Image 1: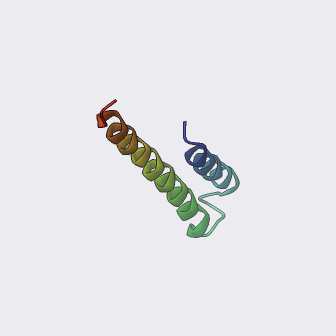
Image 2: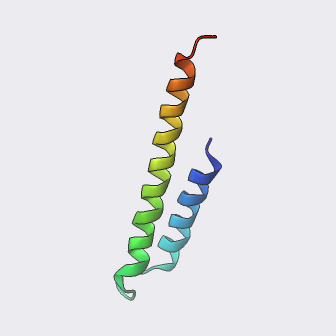
Length: 58
């Protein structure tokens, strides 16, 4: 498990919980999208690294 990706998802949840689509400007909602994108990128990067490590001779 990637702790940085988990933190990104937690940050997205925090911002989403405090943002309101009715009362807020778009900025808080863009932060949610940014944190989710960061988490996704980190998880995909870890998966690629794991595949490359598995391909190395033992």
